[in-house]
Structure formats: structure tokens, C-alpha cells
Length: 210
Image 1: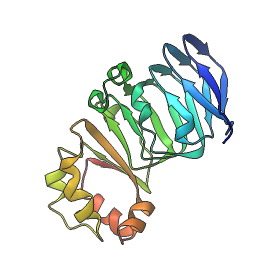
Image 2: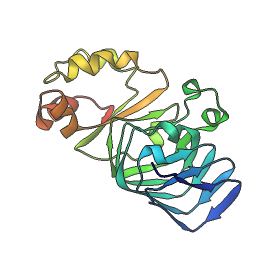
Image 3: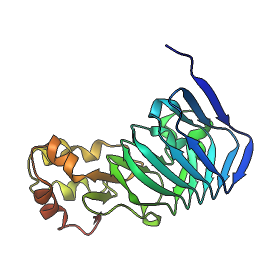
């Protein structure tokens, strides 16, 4: 296996630049005391090649050119007024100090961010107000305050196995979970239903954004 080249951004403030994080042979660090303002960050690497730790992003655009899967390290960043484009699955954003002991989990935050041009699949906002976000439209759908609403959601009949596997276990999710965004075609495939059947149920709830 070839050695990866470390590309490190830290201890600096960068404004109005375009950062291309696309080299498969590099390991990218967006790290301590880094602040990006009005920058465009192009991501085309897997989650294992992207380390985010105590970085601040203000009014930046993230162009995700390759689906970013299971990247929890966004909770080590402070995001304000940022826009996301592309596909993200299993990613968490916001303030979740229970996730780890490092200082990055204490500074994690997200507000006023726009996901309307992204496809979110199993992504969560943790410990931050989802009311300041713009979420993607259908076929994505976003459950606001899923832990607190779990009992209400479990009272209706859901199609396929979605109710039994997902809804009935919402109360077990971390208390910090403020929103959960799913992608209906993925849910339909995993839980033996159809997007249309899912939509017929979520239309009943005013705390589900679609």
C-alpha cells in the first residue's frame, strides 16, 4: 500500500478561495484553528481520507462530488451559513459532546446552513436548532425532534418494516438528535415498501419536512 500524502490546513484563516480535496492518494486535515470564510470546498474523497477537527466554516459551499458516507467528524466543526451540494449518507452535524472527550466535540455547532441542493440519507443534526436549516425536499424527508416525537410516530401504521425497525426504535437514539433526514428510495429498498407509501404516512405530520 502506497503512503498517503498528508495535506494539512490549520492555524490559518482562508477567505474567498476554492479548495480542491480530490486526490485519492492524499489524507486531508481541516484542523485546529482553521477558519474558512466564503470558500468553496470540493470534496471527492472517501470519509477515511477527510479529517475534520476544530475547524470553523463561515458562509462556505461544500461541493460533494463523491458520496460521503458515515462521516461523523462534521460534529468536530463549527458551521455557520454554509451550503451543501451532493450526496451525503450517515453523516452527523452539530453539537454532540457525548460522542467523545476531545475539544472538537465541545466546539461542534451548526446554524443557518442550507442542504436544499444535497441528498441526505440517514443524516442527523445533533444538539443544534434545526429550525435554522434548509433541508432537501422530497424524496428526502426530515423528522424534526425524532426522539421527542417517537411515541406519536409509533401510533400510526407505517408501510413495510420501516415502522418496526426504525420508528419503534427512535426513542433509543441519542437525546441530542434534533433532526433525522432520510432518503425515501433507500428506505423503500431497505424496508420493503415504496416511496409513495411512505409519503402517504409522513403527510400526516406537520413536524416532518419534505
